[in-house]
Image 1 (cartoon, rainbow, N blue to C red):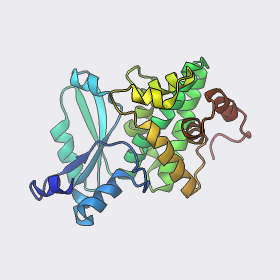
Image 2 (cartoon, helix red, strand yellow):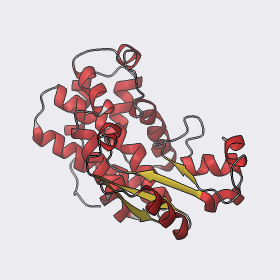
Image 3 (cartoon, helix red, strand yellow):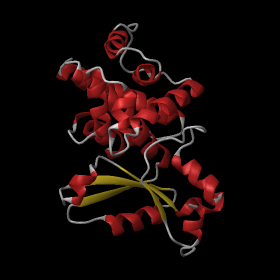
Length: 247
């Protein structure tokens, strides 16, 4: 990565489309890039996220995304470069919020797939999306994000798409888990990466480190890495202690 960037123009912008946390360090991608390229390169960085299935973008179907950058000029430069008649690009200064939305939504999508696979209904799916948004927002805010970012394209928008879309790889993993298949078998048979599998562990560990309550993420970690039955995870989420919704 360092070699690729150093071989280009000194004022070239680096756009990151990776959604997730580094497994061992639990760092966000902007932290990884700044560590790799050097802190002086911070203002060259931008982060792209939002509700987009690559196939539909390639087909020229309408979509909208968000690009976050530390410098507004960089965000606008990327916005102008990537916008087309079928791809609308919005800018943001909330680098942390945009990244956390992209990481957590994959974990919630596995839960939504499990729910659908168990036949728990549309009410359950809606509840998972909504409460998943609450978990995502709690984590992002404690890391310094603006909560409004998570109600936008890189948060709620991407969450809805990944939890409901037929092209969602993470949702598909949840469906297969609900059918009783082993995670290793499911992942081994996939041609593309489902980021939610590794994100489940990383997000769980980061939330635990920061003392952030994320019960859906916790249950997905239990299912994926501790052998817990999907039906038991659903039961335990419903039997948690009662509380106010907004707190």
